[in-house]
Every structure is written in structure tokens, then in C-alpha cells.
Image 1 (cartoon, rainbow, N blue to C red):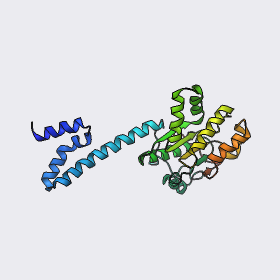
Image 2 (image 1 turned 120 degrees about the vertical axis):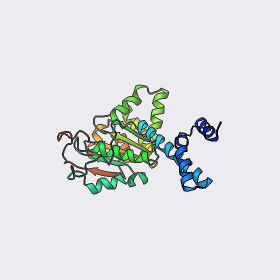
Image 3 (image 1 turned 30 degrees about the horizontal axis):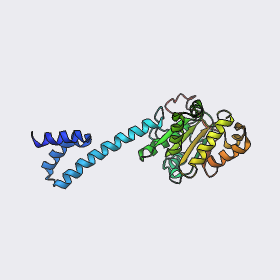
Image 4 (image 1 turned 90 degrees about the horizontal axis):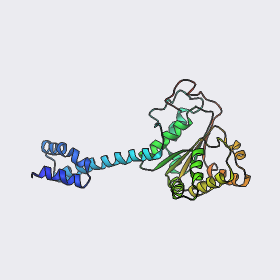
Length: 249
């Protein structure tokens, strides 16, 4: 068996597809450019790393649960300048708040692009190699409440706690009961100072107190989620849906 075939078989056994698929190309480059052994090996390892990074990125995107993928490359910075200035959105896209482990609160009328911005930030964090979890707040609480003593609920809760970025979409859409409030408190408390959480809501934070049955626990939750957070709150803005721009939400 010739050496090249033997190498390909070993690469396959070692699960190194990036090396295996690019071996012929790198051999040709080595011959044409008279590459040394270390240069040749360096290129092969680079191929493998890029392949693995690409695969891991796709796994993180899938695990995040974004649904429809949104990015800043697909964001119309000029459409809703009145609600979200392009300079503000570009600043959020740098993810400085995330690096500082601060939360982000996005509030405003329905359809102006809050979820798109949140998902686009999540996409960027996935690019940086961190795990992201996107959840509709009400649906997440229903999942955690459905089987409160099951291992599945506990695993989901721990996944929320450990996520490099947690996005709670449609926060304060409805009132929470006591058990849901306790779950939110536990989640907010464990993430405080450890990792960022993004909240999107149609209501401003001052209207959130009334959604909790117990004002004490409500205050404790909002202290952990909103105090110290970057707040982007607007009462105006054009709706992408009403304008027929269904690519943005």
C-alpha cells in the first residue's frame, strides 16, 4: 500500500477529515512551493482545526435553538434608525456588555427588530466559541414546570445557568405565578456576575413589577436582571412585519 493511501486511512481512523480531504492539495502545494516538512504539517493541521472549528460552530448554532437564524450581516441598519440608531446597534454588535458580564435589556413595540438584534448577538457569541441558549420566556418556564422533579428539567435548568449567553425573549409578556417566579429568581441569582442574559420585552422594566405575585421576590429578580444592565428602551419604531419585511423580526 502506498504511503498516501496509508496516511488517508490513518487520518480516517483518527477522525481527521480536514487533513484527509486536503491532503492531495497540500502535497501539490508542497511540491510546487518546495515546502519543508514542518510547513507541510502546519498547513495540514490548520486544515483540521478550521474544519473542527466550523463543525463546532454549527453545533453551537443548532444547540442555541434560534429557530430562524439572524445575523448583523442581514440587519437593515437604516430602516429603524429612529428606534435603534446604527451606531447603537454596531456598539452592541461588539459584545462589550457580554465581555463585562453585564445583562442587556431590549424594550420596545412589537416587530421593531428586538429579537433580530438579540439573535444576531447570540450568533456572534457562537462565533467566539461560547454556548448560547435562546428561549421564549414563557415556554422555558412551562418546560421547567412540566416535570419539576425530573432529570430533564434539572438538566435544562443547569443548561440555562451554564450558557455563555442566555436570551429570554418576550420577557414580561404575561404574569408569572409563584413557582415560575421562584424558578426565575434561582436562574437570575446563579447567573449574576457569571454570564450575560439578554431580555427582550414589549414593556419597559418599570412595568415589570406587576407581573410577579410577590413584590419581594419580584424586586429580587429585577435587581439581578436589570440593575447594572445595559438598557435600550424605545417607545417608537416602525414594524418590520407591517412593512412586509418578514426577514427581520
